[in-house]
Amino acid sequence: MSKPLYILILLALLFTQAAAQDDPRQILQNSAAAIKATPGFSAKVTLSGDGSQMILATLPSMTARFTLGNHPEHGHSIHLIGELRAQTTAPPESFDIVYTKDKLFWADHSKQTINIRPPSVSIRVKPPAFKYLLLAELINDTPYQSELDKAESIELQPQQSISGENCNVVYITRSKAASGSQRSGVGAHTMERWFISVDDHLPRRVEQITDAGMIKATLIMELTGLTVAPQSDSDLEVFSPESYKVSDTTRPRTTPNPTLPDQDQPFTKPNPSNTPSIPAAPTNPLAPNYSFTDTANATVSRDTQTGRVTVLYFFGSWSIPAKQTTPLLSTLATELNSNTSLDVQPDTKVDTFAIALRESDPTTLTQDHQSNAYAHRLAINPDSNLPALFKVRVYPTIIVIDDTNRIIFNEHLTKDRNAQALIDEAKAAVTKAIEP
Image 1: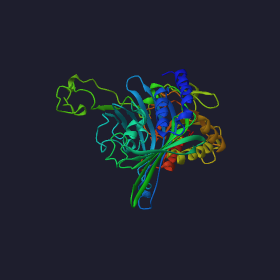
Image 2: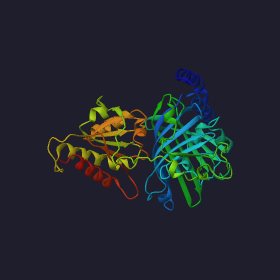
Image 3: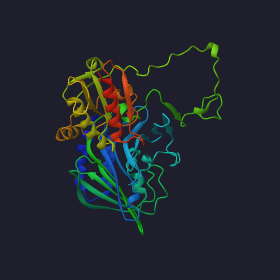
Image 4: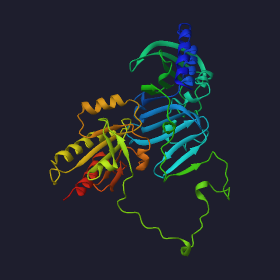
């Protein structure tokens, strides 16, 4: 739906606002109409938990980018990409998922696979992030209707400000504990609170509350920096490098042996005499023909970087590990520029770029970069094809390109490689590239 039509619908909602200000059901109906009318929106989303000391340490946390829009093939879709801690002491795990009415998509980077499953698939199969997508309600044909159908009572609580946005607060008590929603997977919560913006009628926060005697817990999902705008197709799709295979159980089987899954078809060994030899790929492959513009409006490309050593740091401010890695990258950039810790000539030419992807609030990120006086250069939301060119699968990832445009380092955080180790390894690669 076009943005002008969305604005007209909002204007129409204003005429009913006075009558709806004391009617919580009307507030949700107005919000449902605004969601269906919007051309799409994106925001930073956080998930946090609160509860009794017995279970507080078991509650999850998340920082991610949330995108809602209409995909030409899949219809109303939610894309969530970021980092999740399943509980307080658990390490952060990256995820990239898309939620539609008919299909679930997610990337399994360890197996280099894009999975496509029906929403009815067992929760044990889905990544944990699906379990905590408290805003899955927004892609229903009639948003909030399933929650209203479960309501024993519904009331309007005093308005609250959520990140500066004045919100109506709708409190729903469920008629009975849920048996486990397949759509949100959040379990048997007994109450909900929806925080709906007074101005644009879009949700800014949802709380799912469980009160079962000694077990009391609240899961809180909050949207900040929400921007209404049409979303591109790539913003509503899981990032899929060309090397990844696809495991799709939603399509009819057309394989010769329908008893075998798509990825387990019989393998026929090729005849060696008829198989042409394939030369091995070079140890240091040539960098792709990339190009992007940084926040200083300078164009950076393979051509402009020829003769210089280039460090590319792919990250997102929504990524929990990036909060640790980005300051270390700045320290590395300072060392490379001043040569204070490297035994190299003082005229060494090294450029360090932090490339922020899928950012919903570029202004805040730019201000944060400036206030911290980071030494590396910054690019925000460049061409969505850029990470695909380098086959970046996990954030943060650091790539080092030598002065002949050869990729000499391409690594990301792992269970055994923390932020400092990643920076140290990148530094060693740069040192080797600039040795006389």
